[in-house]
Image 1 (cartoon, rainbow, N blue to C red):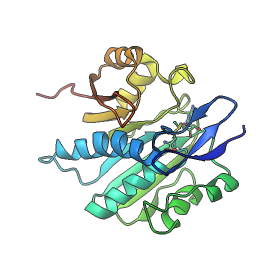
Image 2 (cartoon, protein in one colour):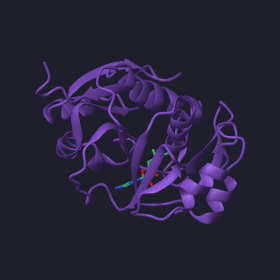
Image 3 (cartoon, rainbow, N blue to C red):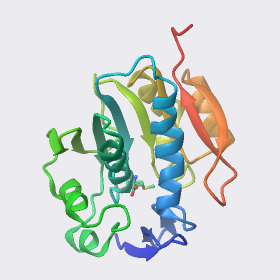
Image 4 (tube, rainbow, N blue to C red):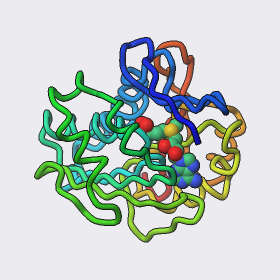
Length: 228
Ligand SMILES: C[S@@+](CC[C@H](N)C(=O)[O-])C[C@H]1O[C@@H](n2cnc3c(N)ncnc32)[C@H](O)[C@@H]1O
Protein backbone atom coordinates (compact mmCIF):
# COMPACT_ATOMS: atom_id res chain seq x y z
CA UNK A 1 0.00 0.00 0.00
CA UNK A 2 1.52 3.32 -1.08
CA UNK A 3 1.56 6.03 1.62
CA UNK A 4 2.85 9.60 1.40
CA UNK A 5 3.87 12.08 4.10
CA UNK A 6 2.06 15.39 3.68
CA UNK A 7 1.96 18.69 5.61
CA UNK A 8 -1.32 19.71 7.20
CA UNK A 9 -2.42 23.34 7.59
CA UNK A 10 -0.95 23.80 11.08
CA UNK A 11 2.45 22.79 9.65
CA UNK A 12 2.47 19.30 11.17
CA UNK A 13 2.91 16.07 9.21
CA UNK A 14 0.38 13.36 8.50
CA UNK A 15 0.07 10.40 6.15
CA UNK A 16 -2.02 10.18 2.99
CA UNK A 17 -3.06 6.92 1.32
CA UNK A 18 -3.54 8.32 -2.21
CA UNK A 19 -5.35 5.29 -3.65
CA UNK A 20 -8.10 5.58 -1.02
CA UNK A 21 -7.88 9.36 -0.49
CA UNK A 22 -7.54 8.74 3.26
CA UNK A 23 -5.43 10.82 5.64
CA UNK A 24 -4.40 9.79 9.16
CA UNK A 25 -5.42 13.20 10.57
CA UNK A 26 -7.38 16.28 9.61
CA UNK A 27 -5.75 18.13 6.71
CA UNK A 28 -6.49 21.33 8.68
CA UNK A 29 -3.96 20.36 11.35
CA UNK A 30 -2.75 16.99 12.61
CA UNK A 31 -1.31 18.21 15.91
CA UNK A 32 -4.21 20.61 16.41
CA UNK A 33 -6.73 17.79 15.92
CA UNK A 34 -4.92 15.25 18.13
CA UNK A 35 -4.55 17.78 20.96
CA UNK A 36 -8.20 18.77 20.79
CA UNK A 37 -9.80 15.33 20.44
CA UNK A 38 -7.53 13.08 22.48
CA UNK A 39 -5.52 15.24 24.90
CA UNK A 40 -8.06 17.93 25.81
CA UNK A 41 -11.40 16.09 25.41
CA UNK A 42 -9.98 12.75 26.57
CA UNK A 43 -7.00 12.83 28.93
CA UNK A 44 -7.49 16.30 30.44
CA UNK A 45 -11.26 15.85 30.74
CA UNK A 46 -10.73 12.55 32.56
CA UNK A 47 -8.19 14.11 34.97
CA UNK A 48 -10.41 17.12 35.63
CA UNK A 49 -13.37 14.87 36.48
CA UNK A 50 -11.53 12.35 38.61
CA UNK A 51 -9.59 14.62 40.95
CA UNK A 52 -10.89 12.86 44.09
CA UNK A 53 -9.99 9.41 42.81
CA UNK A 54 -6.55 10.01 41.38
CA UNK A 55 -5.52 6.58 40.26
CA UNK A 56 -1.90 5.50 40.74
CA UNK A 57 -1.56 5.24 36.98
CA UNK A 58 -3.84 6.40 34.16
CA UNK A 59 -4.44 3.58 31.70
CA UNK A 60 -4.98 4.55 28.07
CA UNK A 61 -5.83 2.32 25.13
CA UNK A 62 -5.41 3.65 21.59
CA UNK A 63 -6.95 2.06 18.51
CA UNK A 64 -4.49 2.73 15.64
CA UNK A 65 -0.91 3.75 16.57
CA UNK A 66 -0.17 5.05 13.05
CA UNK A 67 2.27 7.96 13.11
CA UNK A 68 2.57 7.78 16.92
CA UNK A 69 1.34 11.36 17.24
CA UNK A 70 -1.28 10.65 19.93
CA UNK A 71 1.25 8.64 21.93
CA UNK A 72 3.86 11.40 21.59
CA UNK A 73 1.47 14.12 22.76
CA UNK A 74 0.39 11.95 25.69
CA UNK A 75 4.03 11.36 26.62
CA UNK A 76 4.55 15.13 26.53
CA UNK A 77 1.64 15.55 29.00
CA UNK A 78 3.11 12.85 31.26
CA UNK A 79 6.46 14.64 31.34
CA UNK A 80 5.12 18.19 31.72
CA UNK A 81 2.53 17.38 34.39
CA UNK A 82 4.21 14.35 35.97
CA UNK A 83 1.28 12.03 35.26
CA UNK A 84 1.95 8.34 35.54
CA UNK A 85 0.56 6.73 32.38
CA UNK A 86 0.29 3.21 31.00
CA UNK A 87 -0.30 3.53 27.24
CA UNK A 88 -1.34 0.54 25.18
CA UNK A 89 -1.82 0.83 21.44
CA UNK A 90 -2.70 -1.52 18.61
CA UNK A 91 -1.65 -1.29 14.96
CA UNK A 92 -2.20 -3.65 12.04
CA UNK A 93 -0.19 -1.80 9.38
CA UNK A 94 2.91 -0.27 11.05
CA UNK A 95 4.88 2.38 9.20
CA UNK A 96 8.05 1.26 7.43
CA UNK A 97 11.55 2.64 8.14
CA UNK A 98 11.41 5.07 5.24
CA UNK A 99 8.09 6.54 6.40
CA UNK A 100 9.34 6.85 9.98
CA UNK A 101 12.49 8.63 8.79
CA UNK A 102 10.46 11.13 6.73
CA UNK A 103 7.99 12.01 9.49
CA UNK A 104 8.89 14.67 12.01
CA UNK A 105 7.18 16.05 15.09
CA UNK A 106 10.05 18.27 16.18
CA UNK A 107 7.66 20.96 17.42
CA UNK A 108 6.51 18.60 20.19
CA UNK A 109 9.96 17.55 21.39
CA UNK A 110 13.22 19.23 20.39
CA UNK A 111 14.70 16.03 19.10
CA UNK A 112 13.26 12.83 17.66
CA UNK A 113 14.49 10.62 20.50
CA UNK A 114 11.08 9.75 21.95
CA UNK A 115 9.44 9.53 18.51
CA UNK A 116 11.99 6.92 17.45
CA UNK A 117 11.73 5.02 20.73
CA UNK A 118 7.96 4.73 20.27
CA UNK A 119 8.36 3.41 16.72
CA UNK A 120 11.38 1.19 17.25
CA UNK A 121 10.71 -0.41 20.63
CA UNK A 122 9.66 -4.05 20.80
CA UNK A 123 6.09 -5.11 20.21
CA UNK A 124 4.07 -6.98 22.85
CA UNK A 125 6.24 -5.76 25.76
CA UNK A 126 5.92 -3.11 28.48
CA UNK A 127 8.59 -0.47 27.72
CA UNK A 128 9.48 2.49 29.96
CA UNK A 129 9.91 5.24 27.36
CA UNK A 130 10.19 7.64 30.31
CA UNK A 131 10.00 6.56 33.97
CA UNK A 132 6.39 7.73 34.25
CA UNK A 133 5.30 6.52 30.81
CA UNK A 134 5.00 2.78 30.20
CA UNK A 135 4.28 1.94 26.60
CA UNK A 136 2.95 -1.31 25.10
CA UNK A 137 2.45 -1.82 21.34
CA UNK A 138 0.37 -4.68 19.96
CA UNK A 139 0.70 -5.78 16.36
CA UNK A 140 -2.71 -7.17 15.52
CA UNK A 141 -6.10 -6.26 14.15
CA UNK A 142 -8.45 -4.79 16.69
CA UNK A 143 -11.10 -7.04 15.14
CA UNK A 144 -9.25 -10.13 16.46
CA UNK A 145 -8.05 -8.61 19.70
CA UNK A 146 -9.38 -9.32 23.16
CA UNK A 147 -8.01 -8.51 26.60
CA UNK A 148 -8.89 -8.70 30.28
CA UNK A 149 -7.08 -5.43 30.94
CA UNK A 150 -9.16 -2.41 31.91
CA UNK A 151 -8.53 1.19 30.89
CA UNK A 152 -9.55 4.67 32.04
CA UNK A 153 -9.46 6.25 28.59
CA UNK A 154 -9.83 4.97 25.03
CA UNK A 155 -8.56 7.02 22.11
CA UNK A 156 -10.66 5.65 19.26
CA UNK A 157 -8.71 6.63 16.15
CA UNK A 158 -9.76 4.17 13.43
CA UNK A 159 -10.21 5.35 9.85
CA UNK A 160 -13.65 6.83 9.21
CA UNK A 161 -16.81 4.66 9.14
CA UNK A 162 -17.08 5.11 5.33
CA UNK A 163 -13.63 3.52 4.99
CA UNK A 164 -13.75 0.90 7.77
CA UNK A 165 -17.42 0.25 8.65
CA UNK A 166 -16.48 -2.99 10.45
CA UNK A 167 -14.71 -0.95 13.16
CA UNK A 168 -17.72 1.20 14.06
CA UNK A 169 -20.35 -1.41 14.92
CA UNK A 170 -22.31 -2.01 18.11
CA UNK A 171 -20.31 -5.24 18.57
CA UNK A 172 -16.99 -3.34 18.46
CA UNK A 173 -18.29 -0.71 20.88
CA UNK A 174 -19.51 -3.46 23.24
CA UNK A 175 -15.93 -4.80 23.27
CA UNK A 176 -14.58 -1.30 23.97
CA UNK A 177 -17.20 -0.80 26.72
CA UNK A 178 -16.01 -4.01 28.40
CA UNK A 179 -12.41 -2.71 28.27
CA UNK A 180 -13.25 0.45 30.25
CA UNK A 181 -13.23 0.91 34.01
CA UNK A 182 -16.31 2.60 35.54
CA UNK A 183 -16.18 6.36 34.77
CA UNK A 184 -13.97 5.54 31.80
CA UNK A 185 -14.05 7.78 28.75
CA UNK A 186 -13.89 7.03 25.02
CA UNK A 187 -13.14 9.87 22.62
CA UNK A 188 -13.24 9.94 18.84
CA UNK A 189 -13.10 12.60 16.15
CA UNK A 190 -16.20 11.09 14.50
CA UNK A 191 -19.67 12.45 15.29
CA UNK A 192 -21.86 10.51 12.85
CA UNK A 193 -25.42 9.64 13.93
CA UNK A 194 -25.06 5.91 13.34
CA UNK A 195 -21.85 5.84 15.41
CA UNK A 196 -23.61 7.62 18.29
CA UNK A 197 -26.47 5.12 18.10
CA UNK A 198 -24.09 2.14 18.08
CA UNK A 199 -22.28 3.56 21.14
CA UNK A 200 -25.59 4.06 22.98
CA UNK A 201 -26.71 0.52 22.11
CA UNK A 202 -23.41 -0.78 23.54
CA UNK A 203 -24.15 0.90 26.89
CA UNK A 204 -22.26 4.19 26.67
CA UNK A 205 -23.53 7.62 27.72
CA UNK A 206 -22.80 9.73 24.68
CA UNK A 207 -22.31 13.46 24.20
CA UNK A 208 -21.51 15.54 21.17
CA UNK A 209 -18.97 18.21 21.99
CA UNK A 210 -17.28 20.86 19.84
CA UNK A 211 -14.75 19.39 17.44
CA UNK A 212 -11.36 20.77 16.40
CA UNK A 213 -11.22 23.71 13.94
CA UNK A 214 -13.14 22.91 10.70
CA UNK A 215 -15.09 20.12 12.41
CA UNK A 216 -18.26 21.13 14.20
CA UNK A 217 -18.56 18.15 16.54
CA UNK A 218 -16.84 15.11 17.96
CA UNK A 219 -17.99 12.37 20.36
CA UNK A 220 -17.16 11.74 23.98
CA UNK A 221 -18.71 8.55 25.40
CA UNK A 222 -18.58 7.48 29.04
CA UNK A 223 -19.12 4.31 31.02
CA UNK A 224 -21.45 5.40 33.78
CA UNK A 225 -22.95 2.01 34.69
CA UNK A 226 -22.88 1.45 38.43
CA UNK A 227 -22.05 5.10 39.20
CA UNK A 228 -24.30 7.29 41.34
C1 LIG B 1 -6.81 7.40 11.45
S1 LIG B 1 -5.27 6.48 11.49
C2 LIG B 1 -4.79 7.08 13.07
C3 LIG B 1 -3.41 6.80 13.42
C4 LIG B 1 -2.79 7.34 14.68
N1 LIG B 1 -3.64 7.43 15.82
C5 LIG B 1 -1.98 8.57 14.41
O1 LIG B 1 -2.05 9.51 15.23
O2 LIG B 1 -1.26 8.60 13.44
C6 LIG B 1 -5.89 4.81 11.76
C7 LIG B 1 -4.84 3.79 12.09
O3 LIG B 1 -5.47 2.52 12.36
C8 LIG B 1 -4.71 1.48 11.75
N2 LIG B 1 -5.62 0.34 11.51
C9 LIG B 1 -6.48 0.16 10.49
N3 LIG B 1 -7.20 -0.97 10.65
C10 LIG B 1 -6.78 -1.52 11.81
C11 LIG B 1 -7.17 -2.69 12.53
N4 LIG B 1 -8.13 -3.51 12.07
N5 LIG B 1 -6.54 -2.95 13.70
C12 LIG B 1 -5.56 -2.14 14.18
N6 LIG B 1 -5.17 -1.00 13.53
C13 LIG B 1 -5.76 -0.70 12.37
C14 LIG B 1 -4.20 2.12 10.48
O4 LIG B 1 -3.08 1.42 9.95
C15 LIG B 1 -3.84 3.52 10.97
O5 LIG B 1 -2.54 3.56 11.48
